[in-house]
Amino acid sequence: MTQSQDIEIVLTLAEINKILDALGNMPYREVFELVGKIQTQAEAQLQPVHQQQSNSEATQITTIERTP
Image 1 (spheres, rainbow, N blue to C red):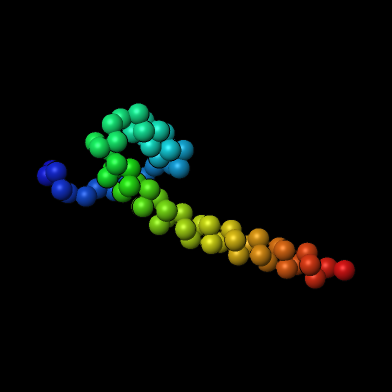
Image 2 (image 1 turned 180 degrees about the vertical axis):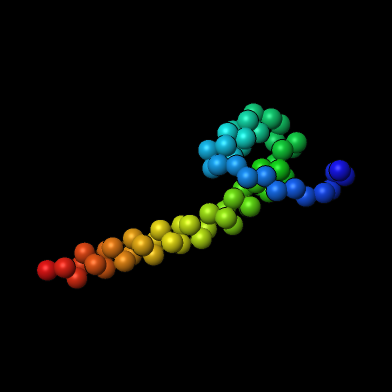
């Protein structure tokens, strides 16, 4: 396996946060790019989940407002 070969790893959000916490204890200049990549990829995957939750909450609010 070469250094530049991408791999896919499936982790829970809690596990990702634990990794980010550990990286936070390392020198910034050594880990900032890695932290950025993790955050960018996580945000891209979590964005559809947040949109679904927002849509669901909006529907619930609309339903509540229409109820006499």
